[in-house]
Image 1 (cartoon, rainbow, N blue to C red):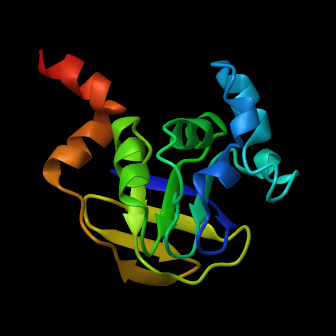
Image 2: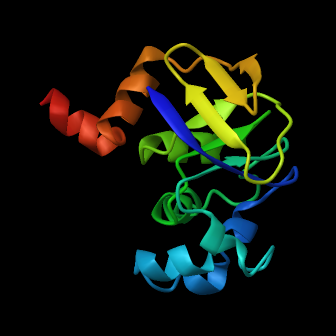
Image 3: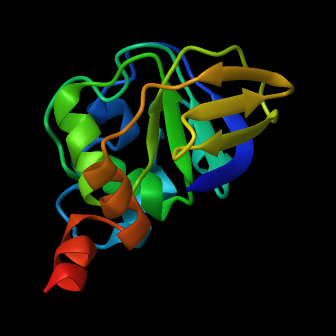
Length: 156
């Protein structure tokens, strides 16, 4: 499974409240979530996420177990997220909805081209390549299917 996109670089410890603020969770309208992703961190960031790969510092997705956070990122057009570590609940929620994650630390500059090969376990950012922590075969199947529910339906 290969993923490409331009880098949007973020710091460490991005929590789910920064991804999508609680005040927008009174609706299930995902287009609202899409418009307000990262609003309190940078009001212009949502416009930069279409076809992006977020490259962040450690502990991405910490905070509450808000399931809407990875959904909002996927709705905003994020193709994948790269970080040295993820909050475990965020990690699983992202895989469950078909949002690919790669655990690795790699330098990036805003707009760099990011190429991820989840099957080979490799990431390249502006010519620098690193091995990523491999995902299990089952997680790769879920991502290829578009998430847990789609994967489950295909198996039936």
